[in-house]
Image 1: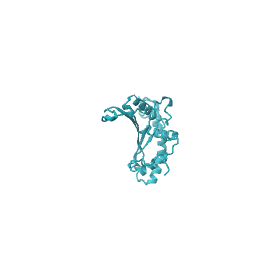
Image 2 (image 1 turned 90 degrees about the vertical axis):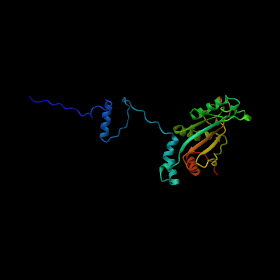
Image 3 (image 1 turned 180 degrees about the horizontal axis):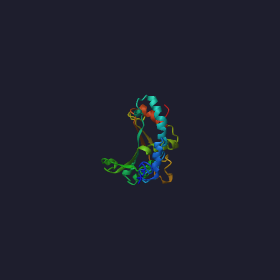
Length: 232
């Protein structure tokens, strides 16, 4: 009697590691030198594509960073200056007499930046200003990453051009270490603010922290990003 033999299919054929036909298709494509264009999660569903880069950050990577490297002759790409964080601070001195005023500052900053502010409190009591330790005197927000780039883009593209009789920012407000601070006198320049809901005018300070080592590098970076400095 002739012996019967059975053939076993190789384990790499047929189904993928998750037991679906998608795994074998991807493996076959890779083995043939093709490119796998779609990713899948553990349950076999298609993974969501990564979010797009902010417009200003994309321009920084494609245009501004190479131009800065050529201008200053950096040997290493890591030496090219960039944005580290943006701090928006809104002081509310009147809150020492009316604590409800801090709520308006928190609301405006939340709408402008898209992030909940932290409340600054007095560190010591000052009798002549009727200020007691621990009283709220302002609010501030620290922006990093995507929110930082999006805020900077909105600031340069829509907010600053809405300032009446705007003649540019002063280029003398650098701190000597590559950081730049300027003030805004009101919050209505941001189109996110509804004028009908504003109880009073509030100014703010904006500090742009960069990785530059000196003011010349930071000034060139901000100018290329679109900061409208006054012509000296």
